[in-house]
Amino acid sequence: MTNRRFPEEPTYDPNKVLDAIIERLQLKNDAALSRALEVAPPVISKIRHRTLPIGATILLRMHEISDFSIRELRAMMGVPAVSINLNT
Image (cartoon, rainbow, N blue to C red; front, side, top):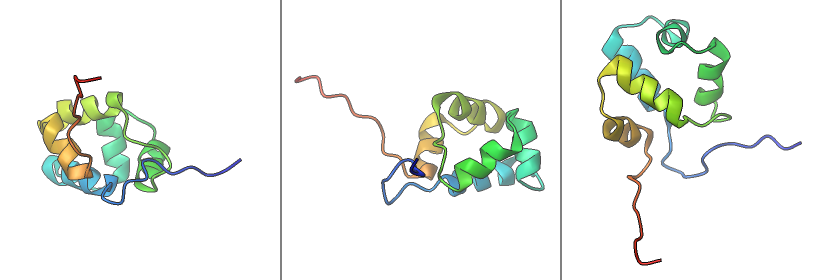
C-alpha cells in the first residue's frame, strides 16, 4: 500500500492555517488545538504531515472556533478558490 499525500499542489501548506488558529486562540500546542477542534490528536499530526487533507467538516469547525472566514482559511492553506465552469 502506498503512502498517499494530499493534495499534491506545491502551494498547499496546512501548517499555516493550523498555526494561525493556534495563534488566534492563544493555544499552547497541537494537543490544545485538537481539543478545540474536537478531534483526536493524531488527526492534527496527519494534517501537518500531509497524509490527511483538511476536509469540509474540519474546515467548518476551524471557521466556527476561529472566526476566520472559509475563504481566509483556504487562502492560508494555499488552496485556490473553487471555480465553477458553467460552459460544460
